[in-house]
Each structure stands twice: as C-alpha cells, then as structure tokens.
Length: 285
Image (cartoon, rainbow, N blue to C red; front, side, top):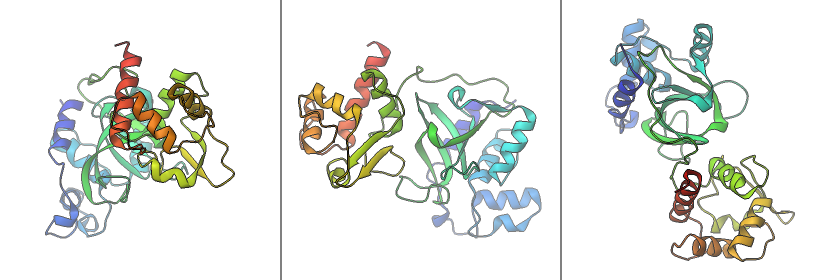
C-alpha cells in the first residue's frame, strides 16, 4: 500500500525536469497521461501538466488517482472525504492553490514539509522563483508557499499518515519575508495578526528586496503611506525612529539586532537570521 513518504521520494526524484529541455512533444507526464487515458491531447505541447505530474507520482507508487484538472480532483476528493484542513497537512498530501482568489484552484503540488503558516512543496509545471509563472513555468521545483493561497488540501487513501518533520509553529528559513514571517512577528510583538505589513513607502522597496515580491503581504503606497504597527514596534526594539515606515535605517537596525552584515538592505541573509531567531523563540530554545 502507498504511503505519503513514498510519494514524496518519488516526486523528489523528478526535481530538475523541465519541459523546455524535453526533446519530445508535450511533457513526460502528459505523454504518460495520454497513453493511460487514451487521449492524445494530453501529449500535446503547451498542455499544463501540474496535475498530471501529481497523477504520475501517485501511480508510480501504486495509487491510481488520476486527474488533469485540479478543480475536478478537489470535487472528487470532497465526495470521498479526503479533504483535510490546511493546518493539518502532512508530507505527501496534495495542496491546491488559488492564485487570484476567485475560489477556483489554479495549481497543485505535494506537501513536503509543513511550517507554521507555509509549506515546502514539490510541484510540477512551476518556476524556480516568484518571478516566473507559478502555474505554467515548465519545471519541477521545490517551493515555499503561504497558506493564504491554499484552496484545498487532499490526503489520498495512503496506507498510513506521514509524520510532520518539523515542530508545529516552525517557520521556513527561506530568506523571504512573507506573510508567515509577518504573522510570527505579530504574534511575538502583540500586534494584530493578519500577515500584512500595511502602508509602506514604495520607493523604499529598493532597500527591502526580500520583502518586495508578489504575495509577500507588504502593502506599497506613495506619499500617503502611514506605516505599520508591527514595523513601529520593531523600530523601537532596534532603537530607530518608530514611524512605522521600513527604510534604510530600519534595515540597518534589523541587521544590527540580528548580528548580520550591516549594509542597509534587507536581503535573504538578514531575513534568514530573523527567521532562525523567531524559531528559537517559538521553540523556547
């Protein structure tokens, strides 16, 4: 019988596949799906393959749960009682994403690690960073995804449930200051917990490259920016002017506080140091 850990090992074995480097028409997973379903369309070039990748991995491990359309997979799973809460996801569960918030799933992958408000995933037909297409990027990659984009989590009928590999409440140390990191900081600092850094001055984005990405939860505005309660509270801890607006002085204070190189730019190194410190605090270490 199939287990979630088996499926994750199978999915991990496919990391690095890219349709752009595949010499044949379509994709490896689309050609397989076309064969088993008797429908040549799926082997055509340009057909999105994220759900067929999931189907392929499951079947390689002995579990037939085929789909090429994520909303249809979700509907079937609901009928079977296989949908679980996003907070309860385990390795091997299928995580379905809704990027535009319209209630319809756009993409699917496997949960590899569950963190406090995000997952480490393995996904087919995505990009290696937020800069490319998330639902049609062409490659098999590991990604870190916030709960906020999750529309459903499906647990297929595995032989046994996999065990979480990190303690509950642990942040992904990925160097991206997104909504999960903000929620953890809000919880620690006693400010409203919504994952949002509100009303920040857009020209300061140049000093905050680890925060200036789509879906980060940072709200960028012009001269009307009013600042964030959380940023103001952090500025007090860093002994900088508590105006709630993150800029180069905030960046230097953050870097001094977390004892990393001080250059006035909040990049991945600075955020990783902060995320590690948050995990130590949450874990009581």
